[in-house]
Length: 114
Length: 112
Image (tube, rainbow over all chains, first blue to last red):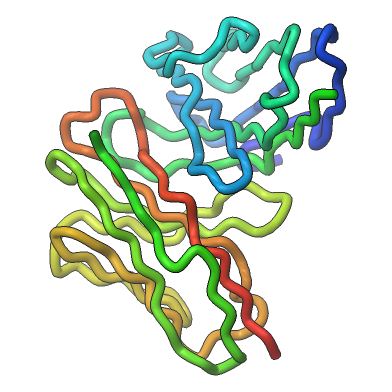
């Protein structure tokens, strides 16, 4: 398997549920990212990990909790979400976060919060 | 603050009708400008990187150009399979670990 793989593709959850999004990259990259994509809005960067250390956190609410156990895997743990958190959550990877290199994206998880 | 504005928001073309998409940007020293294509239900797919004014890149029916204030994505004789949302993004030279700032995209529909 190649590229960036995200699971699940679709997720419906209640506001009191706890769920996790998973991302795996098979490209040998050192950096991984979580982005949020909402309708009519630009892609919003949530978290950046470089060599398994979090290097960027764009004031994301604490109900989103990232985890990067190794350079190939990235998780986004979700708890007590709000309906406005419904969006497409995209994982991406690159070789180095600071060198102007292209990002490789997964297909995303379409999240609906009821 | 780095900003990217794309226009138009949506564009509908007849097959074979050439046109251009615009990406205007404000950045404190450009490291790179990126074009991505996004199909419904999928993540963005990389198309081009441009690094300096005057640079041009081509791929099949697409050509990207760059000036000091904007970039254009020219689509020559488009086909229905070119229908997608096209995203523009920039990275500033002193952005640290923040990878890219994206625009809202242009949704292109090519009608047969």
